[in-house]
Length: 251
Image (cartoon, rainbow, N blue to C red; front, side):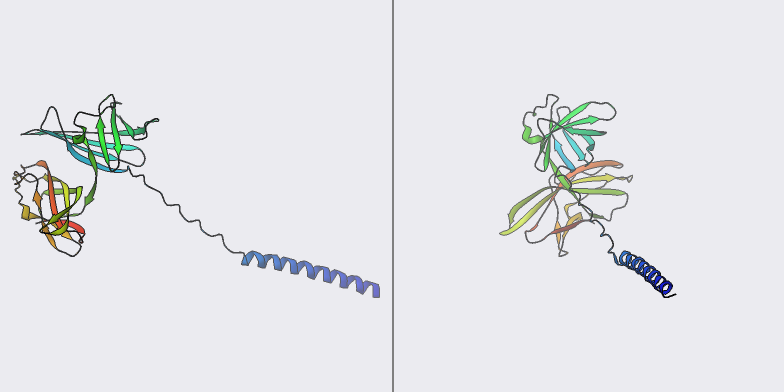
């Protein structure tokens, strides 16, 4: 009898020990810290990604407007407008581009439709078209196309779309004050059935302190923009160096 009680006590202790282990294991699982969420790795955008826009010389027309957008996935969109005295011819293409294996600054654009190649030389914040032999054009300084930045345009005109891209930034002195001169590339689309005439006082730059700075036209005055036509103009603003541009207001 005594032996039987000892045996039962032994099994009771063994069972109790097993239950304790299970409870401890479950508790450990409950208090185990959750996996920390991994932080997203920031994507670095290459410096060459952006919008390049400028007038360049044209042998068969007065001048040519080139607007090239390079995207991070190595696709592109290219708009070209040949400007004549009485008309403008436009064409648009898109496709992919590759970097030359021997020269990483040489881009080869491949048109999706025609499969034709165009070549551009990539510089610091600018791009330069090359001929089919990958050589520079004569007077290559005139073929530099800068990388532009868009600015908000508050436009009060009906049936008129206006876009402005920062073309050039310069440090100048105005009336003895250190100032900044910003030149913007304006694309003015007149969708109305009347010609549009703009004066320099109609276009002002608003700085971060809500001061207005009247524009200066490169072609002064701007010729009237015909009905249902698009016109491109270079327009500048000068303001104190300590201020910062906020947006452009069209009155």
